[in-house]
Image 1 (tube, rainbow, N blue to C red):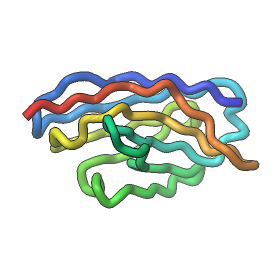
Image 2: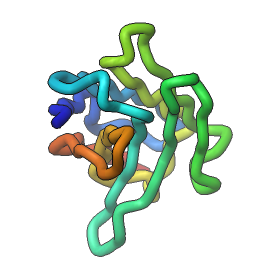
Image 3: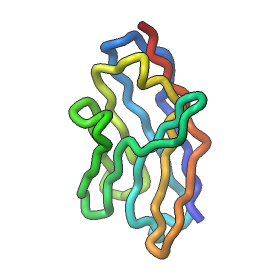
Length: 116
């Protein structure tokens, strides 16, 4: 199992930027990829970005061009740089680790609030 702890959320004005961090511990070697999801009130959790162990990235259309996902060389930190934030980006952002043999581990989430 992998434990994930997010940080970096907060309140930002529209057009601003935030950088989220996620620290992974535990069975790091079992991770195949890491990513970020978000969930706004009353909505389903949706993908934001994913990065594989090989550095291949995937971005959801709704944030493409405004976010960048990265990992450190050790593979136990993943970051999400978010720019040009909009009020509709307000949500709880969750870090996830995709296990090599199936399933995901999740962090507790970090709140991002974008004011207009």
